[in-house]
Length: 430
Image 1 (tube, rainbow, N blue to C red):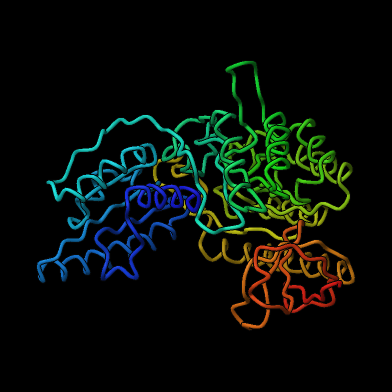
Image 2: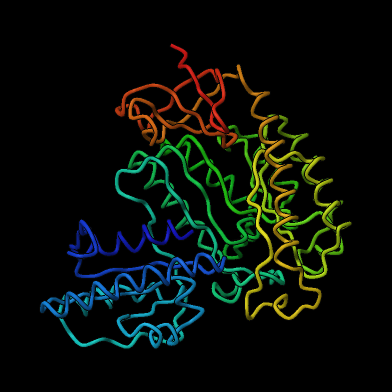
């Protein structure tokens, strides 16, 4: 989502005649688009802000201006406190204030004094999130979250759920196709809770049908979506995906935990049994599909038995990959004040066991795929070997194949011939 929003902000600059600077030392304006989902993300942002504050100080000493703008979730969470902590920051632009970015650009262009942004802005979607020259694109379809999972800060920094006008979504998909985009990922904090009332109720499954039609007509060949909540994953969504091969055979389905007791304490809105049933329904409709997930261990009150239930769920589902992390209390969330905090040592030990099991499953699932034929989208040049190209299958498996950079952005049919770590080696079928 941050990538999509950053692309929209970049586009806003280009439309006013701005160009990207080679580096921060030569820029007239630096915008840092932040994330607050993890504490580590905020720590990285603090480091980046301090860096550009130092650059700005040197620039001012030499008689040159530098406008520093902090945007995104951390800007929303901290507000004026961020500017107080870093006086070098000129503007703090929260998630709902992006529509005012043009006012900041205008002020910088006219070299006027700092303008005051509306402190209670209404969120609005950008018209396009397309990065120039890219063949893959993100298209946000909704914003915010109503779930209030007890450990999560997202609803507080993103606000309540707002669904985007389906006509705007269709228009952006058409534009992307016209610009040569081959793959689109539909985005939302809780993407499958999409709901639009004007002109009759339209839910996520119906939007997927619209997206697939627009994509096919405009030349886009693949569709994905992130991130889906199990409690909102409908049978109709499964049916739409199964009936239309345009949808990639991969779903990121966040489980977070395998214990009903912990899931309830997390306020996830579903049970272990519901999740396992849903995973089974998805695989029954699309046997070739891969599943990935998020797993959070060390939640307050978690017992050894709770962890064993998570490991057992992993054994049953067998995810292709997982984002695994241990609980870090976020001030302002319900879980911050829960009793039964787990020690750092125990959290790390439990996380290591989850990681070990997931590595086992990933290796096993990938090994089974050797020899398979895949139509892949070539994404870029390998960082390890300039003579090789990085690609990705529909199942979200990474593949490396020999070839020239001129093939980037095109499709190729490959046979997965071997494995190096978690990356396939492949040969092209001529």
